[in-house]
Length: 412
Length: 161
Image 1 (spheres, chains in turn yellow, green):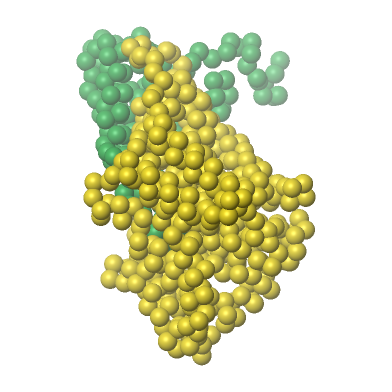
Image 2: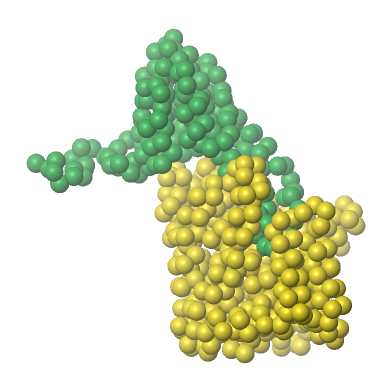
């Protein structure tokens, strides 16, 4: 009975997130599901509290990062990045793609994938259009790197934050172990995207008269200094014994005070409170489902140990699960199982759940199928092109990054 | 004679120069540019990449406005380079389909190869390939940059001397 309730609660939460019913938003369904599993006794109040206590700091961390990224936008960081990309491109589309790779990989690593998707991608589009160059390769690069370049730091992706504690490593060791996999994933993206979009990257052959040379743009020094200090704080967090979340919060507060938002509402909405509630509630529901058999099923699917084949297996299963139910629940489900083989298996799982979603634009096959059925024609996205790019990059990046992780684990 | 010139970001100067040299003085010229709606969508709609995420719309001017303004600017620059009166047509949608539809009723379509700058099939990329294959009017297919001389051409084995 309890088993069935827990699984139905999980299914309801995931369905609500995919279906996006207006009358039953995902966060409300997830909260209701969490309340139900506790009420019927599928999860004890104590266990629910433990789950919330474990997720609370992670969710707070995410909120601080979202506010920090939004403050960076107000401070003009992304506009400056756009101007820098235009300057560095010297009006050559191929060079622009290299600049976009630097900007997107850096933004994703430091300010998380949301900053790249929401804040950087429109800037990249405008920069390409003004060159003028076909925006196609540059926009696809942002979209892909938001996922595959989110391996480097615990702050680069919510999945990393969720698994950070389970990985049992310091912030700097996480970064040291993931640096090579991160670079390898970016290299795979570069090799594939620069070839697939070679036609779009050719420069206009004849020089175009009447265009003045770009001037080197001014940089928002204060905001960049705050980001640098926040990163430094992350780096020394384990040495000084202060949790990284406090450095993120401090950075967010300083930048917000320096560049206050228009209203309190916009400050709160930057932190996406309903999403934070959803994560907390989903954590409770996944804990209940895990206690009632889901963990043992996942455990039986996953290879154990830290050998290269085991890491490849973990990454592959994680990528498949991320594509079935989205990467967030996949992380919550798998992290509980693989934490015994930390840090290797936890980091391999992150490679799977972070790189895997590039297979589909919408995050998972479930979402893709749902949208095809329900909104057959209201979106003009070229699913075929996205799937083709995903098929070319994801398996290669998964394997190459996991091998790189294995190497890093041997050496470091 | 009604001629349509397909303006793209990468090859428009060559297209315009060839059209200026080859079109008769009394030709009615239209310049068309297509903004790719799928790319706009990707850039302007923060994907639900993560479960349960209703991401806020990106701040700043909407991507479509930027695309429209830049397309108009590009068309005007092309008309200036052409040095004669021309109608401007900014379309948005799937590129191949829009060009084919735009070319209906014209006597000539001027367009550039969008692929490798070599004398080989890859010199025509997939958008241009579709348009060449499906256009209902004569097509003037120009090189975006002057191709290598015939002595550098790579002949298929059965045609080699």
